[in-house]
Length: 131
Image (cartoon, rainbow, N blue to C red; front, side, top):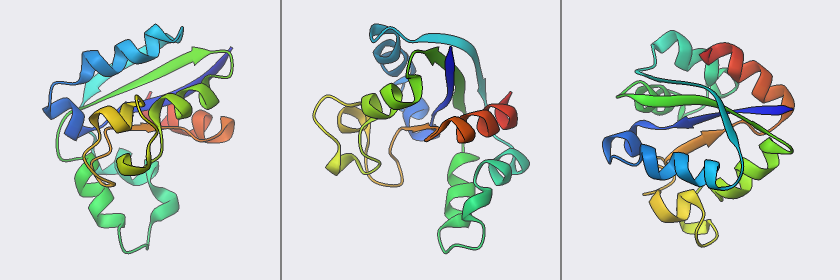
């Protein structure tokens, strides 16, 4: 059974969207294997965004993801990585297809509501960082 990491980011938690977002994944037949509500430490954030270190937007990413509570969870199911990325929609909510999570709830490129692993390798790495 394939697994992926999903984060409901601080902007969505602040706007009370946890239940709405979780229900989208469950409605599409995906199972929550692990879940926690937490405020990310700088250490976890740095490990999660390591590939962006040194880029102009790195500090903004770190400050954003550590700026409030988030929900980290592991979803599992067949082709879960591909399915979750389709359910989430494009990274920029203005480019996301109608009825995707980012189209429905995203504010802008920085406050785009959710994160999901983009490959099996990323999922394995990211799950080990958060759990």
